[in-house]
Amino acid sequence: MAKSVNYATRDYTVEPGATLQIVRQAQFVACLAASSTFKIAFDDGSESDFEAGLTYSPESGFSRILIRNPGAQTLTVSLGIGAGNIRDGRVTINAGVTLPVREGAPDVFTAQRIQIVSQTDTLILPENPLRKEVIIQNQNSSGTLYLNGAPMGGDNKGLAVLYGGASVTLETTAAIYGYNWAMGYYNVTELSWSA
Image (cartoon, rainbow, N blue to C red; front, side):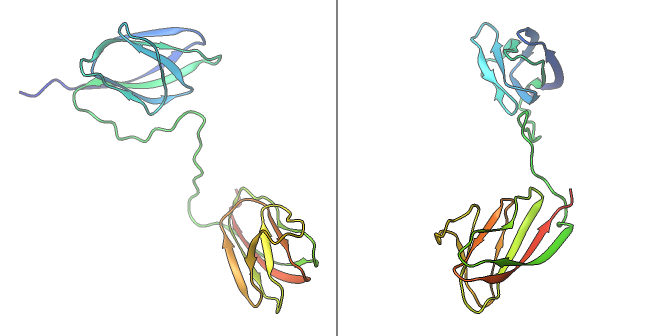
């Protein structure tokens, strides 16, 4: 004979400093979303920290959930409460976390020729949070180009791009500085998104 299975998703709002009691016979509770971390207790047990993505499922189940909001902002929380062998396969992301997601290829293509004066740190490209990648090519007949995310002050501590047509592709949004012991010109191609 099959065991009883049930599941319900409920949204709750808890004011700062307040405690909410939920009375329900269940075997597990999953936090599907929460605006911040909060305190939770089951039956007459002690409080524990709880947040989006966590699930609690004691062997003997529980009949009461206490949610306390210790924060200064109103807490909104979505809980999945149930019994039986039910698993929620949805992806859960903690409050305040954003995912850097872009659809399709970058829509901005810019190419330029940059001059680097002998023994001088030069900003090749400023920081660009919309940049996908940059290609830098050293077409000079002599002189290695050194790249770094900050001025090098004469030290060859950067990524070396050899002369004679060598290139490097960087997938970064950071600023890019160049340094060379001899003056040179470099092809810089940037792929980015317009927004």
